[in-house]
Length: 251
Image (cartoon, rainbow, N blue to C red; front, side):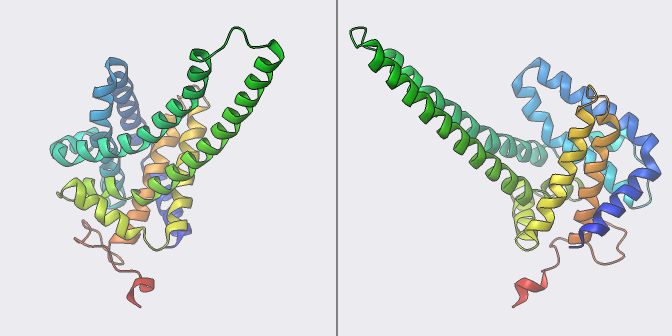
């Protein structure tokens, strides 16, 4: 995969449709925000279809069409796949963080429960200092491990939602194809995922209003990477059922 091509194609497509993207981005952000404000569950249920919708918009633009809000909600037409795919993604990323939080709080709770009021103050202070240092080291290692896992997982599922936006298949098949497509060229895809995250982060620095402009750039870049990975050269139609097998896997 040529990183430069994906970035250039994504930016070129976005530049040609940036005015159309403003409305789509606004609808996307408002919908996701309202869903999360209502309850955690609605937010988890819509994230998959909405992400698939953003990729549907990006793919249509790159195939000569226009960016429309109708495509943004197209992911709900395949809710059986997109909702489950979004839930799998969210739960996979949330459970390790929850486990880390519990493990971080456990020592403090055990110390509070087992505190001995008759223990000399200097011993209690020393025990507290040692426990605090241990918790700090564990927290640092755990958070670093979590971010490494998150980057790995985000890279391996980078094409799940473009696949679901592009074809009517099950969520498990979309995950299988994405894992297969990122088996080789992993570092290139990881860099593209990181670049897409940077664009979104830049927009959030400006009271989140900037995300109206920067959020679609990440989707456009990843959509271009998806087309390069899954479509035949020069193709201007939905991707084939299987991505081309990289030469590194043929041996």
